[in-house]
Figure 1: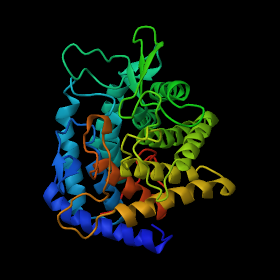
Figure 2: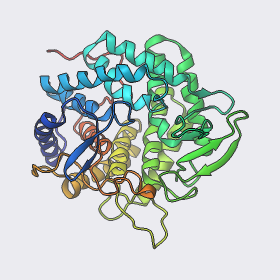
Figure 3: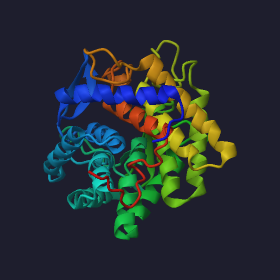
Figure 4: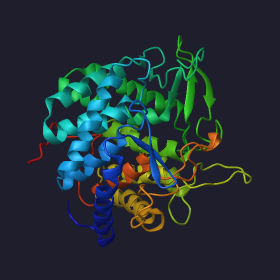
Length: 385
């Protein structure tokens, strides 16, 4: 890792120090949101299960630390039971197994991890609706619920698992489905002004659009900031894996919209289109995701363009570190404060979130010179020791 700025090196060191402490408490659990200073653990089947082990792999990659590796591997092993539980699996298999099995295989060459990643990719491929050209999001949350036609913008960060599977196996089916889903996101999720919808409900039989749903945004036509972050990063990754210029243009369009709506401290509100009577809580997780995506996007552009996105990404990360980071407080396990998980339902509206922590660390790694992310790994990069 090369040094680019003293503050980012300092930030990386503080992350390492703090995670060494918190990992003794969290262990091989699955944290989601920090409540009252303690990360609440979810079941291994919850969509955020990959972010804690993924964060540990990020740190282990730069400075091998056996405890981080051991915890990450124990988390991955617990997901085996989840993989065999059809009723709990949904489109978030990409989040879960990219940051566990793909990361492990990329860094260590573990063949069991490769097998797990490929199995997860096959199961994710099974959720592809060929009439609507989308990957179905969730299974029914309650008996009788019909959401078989639902797709969400978050899934753009799940499709890298399919691109990876095509690269590893030489089988284009995975890549074809990933591209078709990305094309659907271009057509129905990302607006001309670069703002983004969260949920689109399709007719599951015909593939026609049935309605737009606000989801975790304020409403169907609002501009949920974390959705924009998913779209920005997801489209940049789709461009990386395919070379399709339409994906690059979409990533840049969303990036411009995101940057233009940032407040003075560069950390976004949870939605960019809010009525005056609705609280504009910050969502540090949206900022962290977008920052890492901006740095990744910058790496795909010429020198003339790249500095625009790199500087914006660095500005967000620095603000997160200096204004929202929690480094010395022994009573707080989270790294980045003021995340907003689901404002419309009042869930974790001012809390550290594990995915915010993960993307903050991933962004720091990129800023400090690491060119690879687990969403776009090289064939194999085996660490020594």
